[in-house]
Image 1: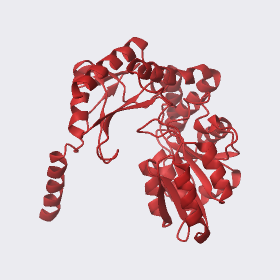
Image 2: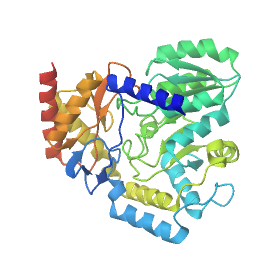
Image 3: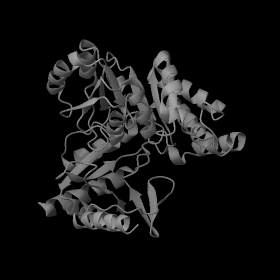
Image 4: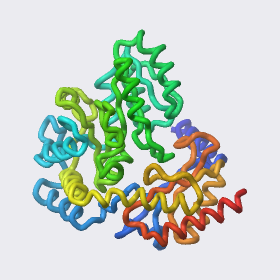
Length: 384
């Protein structure tokens, strides 16, 4: 026990010295973009609730009704007794949205990638992963036992070289990428990725956690490239849909295989009814009001144009400060002005790229977006 405590203390001291220690801060979200911390109400630009669905009255009512009708929890794995009726309805809705034959719902987006990737590839196979792909893609790849080969971020020439070298000596090949990259907000060239994958008989997996609900009338980043073949479309319910959970959309055969072999579905309790009910209501709202899905990107572009930055590609905009201390100082300065913009530090982002990662939502007022842009412009000027 003494050695364990000494290990933990030493690691924490090292993180403190580098300004990399993280601490939980209780936060209460209110309607709109308001978050309450330490008794203060702040306008949050750090939430992934891109459409304000988490507090939408219809979504909240659907969650409450689902809990009343089906209980607070699923109580078992979906393959035992945890496959409550709402999950089938949700999977049908997700498949319609993404234009696939079927869908499989998991307990979270992280669990989806941890289950999907090792089900499809293993020892003797190869996984080529975009260098900036989300941590859950890397974790799923590591669990698979397949050979992992990173390729330079959104660099199709590098991917083509690596596919040419790796594919001939592998039984199966998987190429994994974010659709919208969570820390940079840029979009994967899914059309070019699709062409390369088809040429080398590789399967393309796109994690569209930050694209669904906010791009292509809510259908996500894949729908920006109608000709692209994306057999594995993964995503989450916890961002634009305002709920919790993850999913994989694909062919009927692939989904059936996942439901009988993906360990994070087989050995995990099913998604709570309230989460499924909330997500179903959010899907209904998106289908009824596709114009709503365009608003977060419009807010992000209002911000980037005010700062003279390139047009945002998604609702995510990074403002790089470099060092962790500089990013933390900028976040603290904005909090003093009434904004919550959390600093993102390594290892979430590469060394030397600590940043403010801004997430724009349909519930943000234009006046607040402009005020934030002007405040950040001042901070950048001072830092320079």
